[in-house]
Length: 170
Image 1: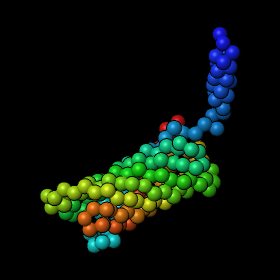
Image 2 (image 1 turned 90 degrees about the vertical axis):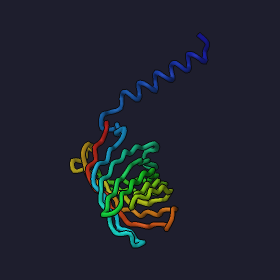
Image 3 (image 1 turned 135 degrees about the vertical axis):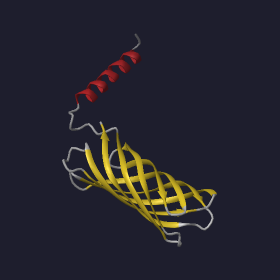
Image 4 (image 1 turned 45 degrees about the vertical axis):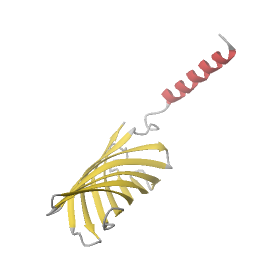
C-alpha cells in the first residue's frame, strides 16, 4: 500500500474511534420534531384562523445554525391556508432546560377562499422558545410567535403563534 493510502486509513480509523468514544451525554439529537397547534391574526383585515403545526428541525452547525422545515394548515370560516416554510435560526442555550432561537425564512402560501385558489411566496420571522423539563432533550414543549408577509395579491401580513410538543430523535 502507498504511504498516502496508509495515512488515509489510519486517519479514518482514528476519527471513527474518536466518534465512537464520545459519551452518550455529548451526543446531540439528529432532529427534533415539533407537533402542535397554531393560531394567526391578519393585520390586513382578514380575520383570525386556527390549525395545526408540524415541523422538523436539524442542526447543521452546532450553536450557530438550525434549519426548520414545516407546514401549517390554517382554517377560518371561509378559507383554508397552507403555509410551508424553511427557517434559518440562530440558537442560544439559556440553560440546560431552555433554548431560544430567532430566525427568518421563505414560505409558500396556498390559499383557498370562496372557490378561488391562490399560491404566493412570502417571508416569515420567528422567535422560538424551547423548554425541556427533564433537561435531557428527549421530550419538551415549544412556543413560537411569528410574523408573516405574503408577496401575493394584497400583500397580506399576519401575526401568529405556534405551540406544542417537541420530540427529539436520537
